[in-house]
Image 1: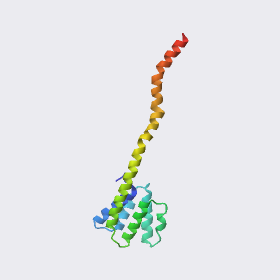
Image 2: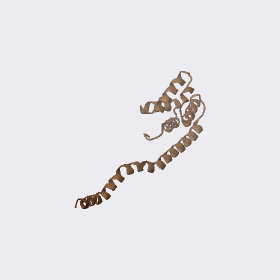
Image 3: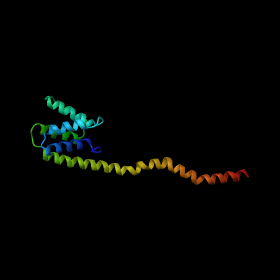
Image 4: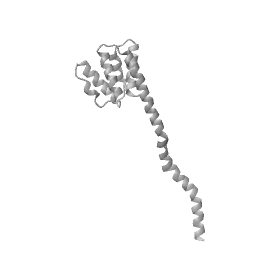
Length: 145
């Protein structure tokens, strides 16, 4: 699951915990502990859990987050409050997967344009040297005669 988007990774971890009969808190804790240090969403989840366990306000953590991340934390808050969120998590998983597919599609659409830069910068001048090199050598030899 290394290449997954952090919200999708978190959601799948929580759904696995629910399927195993564990609480949402166990899935969130496992995600927060197992996530890499450069995963900024894991630090948001850690802060969310810390604030939730101490009954502190946590909505300020939603500022600056994407819509899917905000929705995911809202659903987790409902689940931690004791509401049933399994169907909401399924619907959110589908939405996040669609967003990931759209982001991958947009990246793949731009990839040919991005690959033109090395072609134009490195290969095309080398091709011109190979093509015009013998012509220039022949021209210089003719001028020197």
